[in-house]
Image 1 (cartoon, protein in one colour):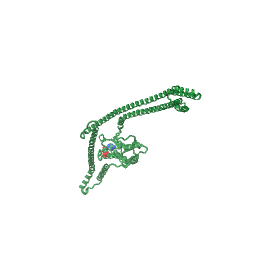
Image 2 (cartoon, protein in one colour):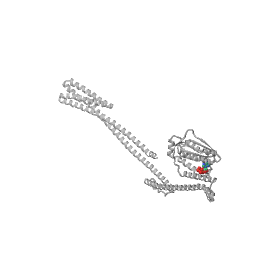
Image 3 (cartoon, protein in one colour):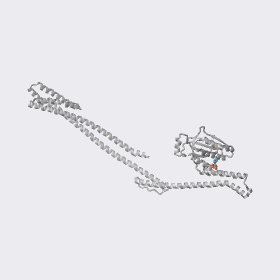
Image 4 (spheres, protein in one colour):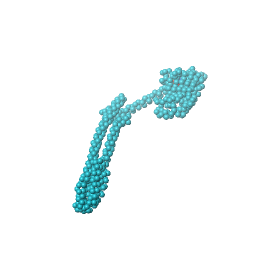
Amino acid sequence: MKSTIMVNIAGPMFGLSLLLLGIGILAATKVQQQQRVNADLITREVNALLAVEELYIVVRDIRHELNLYLRTREPRSLDNIAGYIRSAKEPMELAKQLARTKTESQLISNVESGYQDFLTRFNEIVSDETHAERDQSLAELNDQFLESRIFAPIRRCIGHNRDIVERTIQAGTSTANQMRIGFLLLGITGSIAGLVFGLGIARAITRSFVQLDVSVRSVSGKLKGISPPVQISHIGDLQGLDFNIRQLEGEIGEVVERLQRRELEVLRGEQLAVVGQLAAGVAHELRNPLMPVKVLVQSAIEKGDAGALRGAELQIVNDEIQRLEKSIQAFLDFARPPVLESVRAEIQEIIRRAVDLIATHAIRKQVTLELEMPQQPVFCLVDGPQLRQVLLNLFLNSFDAMQQGGRIHVRLSEINEPWAETVSLQDALRIRNSAHTDSIEITVTDSGPGFAQDMLAHVFEPFVTTKETGTGLGLSICERIITAHGGTILARNASTGGAEFVIRIPHRI
Ligand code: ADP
């Protein structure tokens, strides 16, 4: 529930944030790449421009020295020119290397060829020609050659390089502008989307509050019959809802307390009823055998010395005393809740010992005992003597029901059915984890008349008996012992007509 709400509310928000983050990272990477390319381009073009400008300065110095020589005829100027010619080599090479476009390379190559021609011509003039011709030739070289073949291409080259640098800077500026607009749009879109989602989430939460409010109203309505109605304030108001829930909480607490008190009262009432029932049962069961004893004893008193009890009369007194003892034992068993001393025991052994104890009785009563048990020993955690007591009770009841003799069939089996309702959760888990069968089942079936239909639903209730001398406690004690084992016992009429008891005990070993 909580995770569904989180997914519903935070999911789209998270998705949108991821999308915006992705776009942002992509755009930033693109800008960085573009800037790096632009910076490289500008650096290269600026270096090329510097190289060409340096070349321009060297050539200008050469022209200056040439003019100086033509004015002063100072040979040192010619030496200086030779020095300048050497220093022009480096910027020339650099300009060639840095030339990027075809035009740039063409222009540099023009400058280079003009420069080479100038050098060749200058060297020829300086080394071969006579003084008078040399001056004339150098003047011509200065006037015509330098301007047209070197300065003009260098200026074109500088202009071209400046154009490139400017264009590159402009391209960088326009990219930056585009990015600025892009980021602005991204920011605006993100804010609008955040606003829309925020509103959506706010509406969803409000709707949840409304639903919660309605639930609170509904619970409040249900409590109305038990406690005063809860006042619900404005729907969707968080503080109001909080107040309502607190109020409802208080009401529920009060109702629960009242219910607990009532439950205790009912329990006490039930206990008193059971005690009353028990007292009535005890009085009835003790008074019945006492009656013949009292009559016999009173008549003996009345007869004086001649009225001593003997023979059949003493037998009656003895029988009634035994009946009293039996009843008192049954009451004690009933009054004492069974305390189990469970041990791992073989169930076949317990059944066999119970059967042995009533074997002679069975022969006398002409009852045949049949056992149907697995060959393999079935072990289970049980209180052996108490389980045996249960079986004995069932057998004795069957003897009572089959006055003309009959048959008692005892079957032991292992059952693989989960204990959903009868076993506590811990027990169910323990049984499951034990990797054994879920329960053991003992079925006792007799060939007697079975139960009367109206009797069937009440056989396990205390003091329910159809027998003249019965206490009605035997089956009730049996049920308590089996329940203490975490098991169940049920009574039904078998398909063959006799009574059938089915005992199931969780298979703990
Ligand atoms: P009690 O034996 O003192 O009557 P129980 O609690 O043992 O008390 O039995 C309650 C009643 O259940 C019996 O009185 C009898 O009517 C009925 N009952 C028990 N076992 C059988 C049986 N095997 N066949 C028929 N009825 C039975």
